[in-house]
Length: 446
Image 1 (cartoon, rainbow, N blue to C red):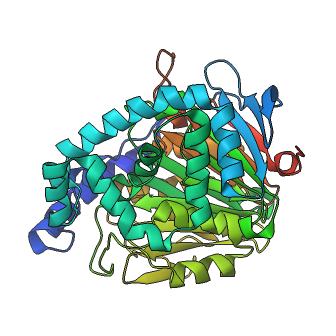
Image 2: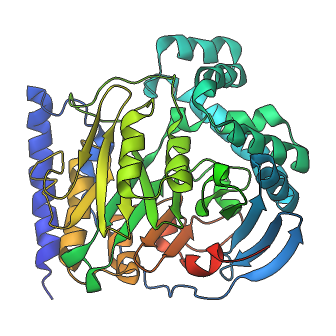
Image 3: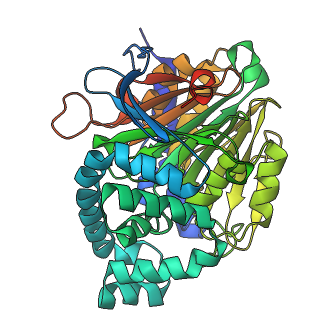
């Protein structure tokens, strides 16, 4: 059967190539790189059934319990940590995941160190920081990066890292340095927030697709951490999706039914402000939102007032209010968008009622338009299951991991890239997703 949509993609891809070529000549899209200008191909639907099995108990210690979820090769560690201090959290985490941390940390560190050194000219870092890495090495540069952000950090986060290092018997400085890498590497990603007429039954849904390096081995030890604070100074329960030894937030949901998404921006336009290496690292901005804010307004207020650092696009959705916002984020400027004023406004990034979305970058025509088409094609019928089947897989976004949040029912769906020695496709969006019922997980006692 003739596929009109397929023809439309090919035609629009041709138009985009012509438009982008002209734009480069006229300077309109001078920052758009080849990655964002050329890929108009669609992926195949993900037809793998979602794993809905219950968590399997593995081990417990004081202040912590370890489970596994998923089946076959697509298993994920699910850890619950409890306590009255960050150190309590970290020590339980480091005790239960000691073996996994020892396996993933050296490999990931060695890989990212070499990648950053090889890619210095493409990372848009301050010249003095590039020279520091070249002359003194990445560890020293990251120690200085940590010095620049320390006064903006929550001391309990450092206490948590100290607890991990003590329990897992690894170098504390290495743990801290690992958490400074995000400000340098960032990664390409995609996001959406959908509500009201955009979804089946009017649910509030959110996508966080992480397109990051799959060669560092992070996906060998995927971890979902459920935090259970024993005191108000540590906030409220939240779920963080990451890897063994990593406590910064790139993906996650809170017990107040807030979700977070993020995209690193490599191709901004002149509506962005400047960048700075001094401020609260974005992985801890996102964590703060999940751990401490209770409403969408709380989250947006925090973003507006925190000392920000680099060029990003953030997404925050609120299952209680039934809406979402996209944030244009930089050190000196911040702008908040809903479905009525979403930016950038272009033929390749049209507005959609009851939706905010961004594909891979700010100025990224073909990727932005693919995500637009996927949402519009499923509009009004979108569920987490349909998103997994016909959005992330068709758009081809979420190499390292994917999170789809049902913020109405407080359920999260997660997939990870193929691990070392595993079979099947590499990209997370092509693999099996696991369902995590956060109503159950947030309510688990010690």
